[in-house]
Length: 621
Image (cartoon, rainbow, N blue to C red; front, side, top):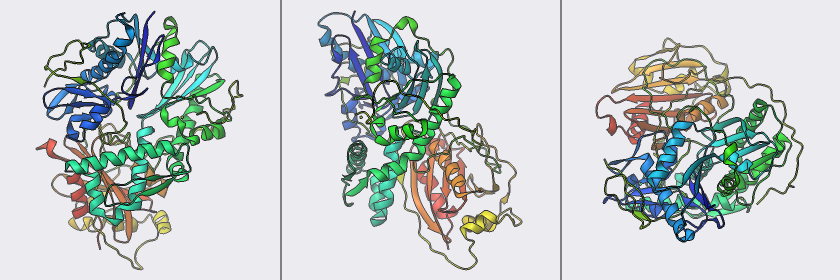
């Protein structure tokens, strides 16, 4: 029986053929799950897509799987069906597998997917496979079930650190999923983003304009430099799994930067602790004690992953030699008659932008786990992540079956953490429930996340009248507009223009509230800014990061100084809605600048939000 298993992941795609093993699809065992649309309609995938992305980043999508809930994605001026993009990836796999079949036909094609996916997403995956010309029996296989199939008949947990999200599943001895959970802001791409920001803090001050050009490219050379840096960061992350430090080669005019494993681990530790807490709570929810914790995903090669799980759970997890291919390999041996699938879809992985109503902000913020303040952006995908490859797919502008000739019609407009295998006593600690600190999550959904930086105007201000950080925490007295001394320091001259008042509540459609002292100011041209004083510096940072992590579109970010304060801001726009969140280092406060563009909505860009902040909101002298 000829069975093909395909694990189309967010970052990479892996295929395994019965009797053959892992298929070399594009010069290696993994192929980037990326697509690029040529002007003539030719759709390219993998490494070739990545190479061509340097010509026109607007025609490139690094992670189309992230958009499974969207109907289309925009490549250049064309709206391409998401199913067509996924079909092109499946078609490239089929093209590599066909010669290995020596004229025979596939009996089954097993398509893996996240355990949390319901029928709608699974059906879109199956439709994409059919569109690619896969004609054998299509069998959807939950990723956790595929991994469990390699673990024998015993209860286990699957810790899946993917590129896009972190997922955990607990299964019984029959490989039935008893409980699962996920974190949408913890993934390999977030690690890459954390490294980018870390290096930026080290070098950007030497040549702010050069750093701006690097992160906000306008020329082909700029784009190539940015893509080269992203590749350097990915390789650095991988090398730090084996080495104590690495040198990151920087494009001119910047000199190379040395990054240590300790620095990387400091950046990602908070997120890994959150993932382990979710593992523990999911085990409790399942009501069984797993004998193993299996690590899945390339990011699990980082030693800190297994270390934290061992520290917090009391077990050394099982880390396969090739975590990237374990899902596709496991799918080969799954008993399909025992597969159980989720019957309902959960919330969309892609959320359309909500309407932001300019109104006073309200107290309250949560999230059982603190957001990692070192990583911003949900899954920051900068154009051109992982290496891998291709095949070209001419687009006659009509959907149809993939042919072995290589054309594809598209529709129009890490090694184990030193430990032992075998049974390990699971010592999941009883965790006391965490207090809810509701987070204001501004869900600005979108596709590819590109990071940019803007140089803020620099002002210095000092004097006896400026409140200290400790005074900020204790000072609750408010003036007529609702400002405390600290909030007034952050607001600068904005209150002088009027339109500021104390806020008892704020309405941001689909989001929850924030806890603290809040002042809302209406400025001009559709802009409004909300200043929030929380009970701790960590609280302010976590809330600001939660907002930033919801940015799933192109983002601009930079540091700012003024009025005796310093901090950073991050801005994003989508469908006419703009949000910029800014923090003050060492102070328990932050601000949110918003804009609704009723006219020419598509023209509102992150740069515009950043420019307005620097000129009209950023506190000066």
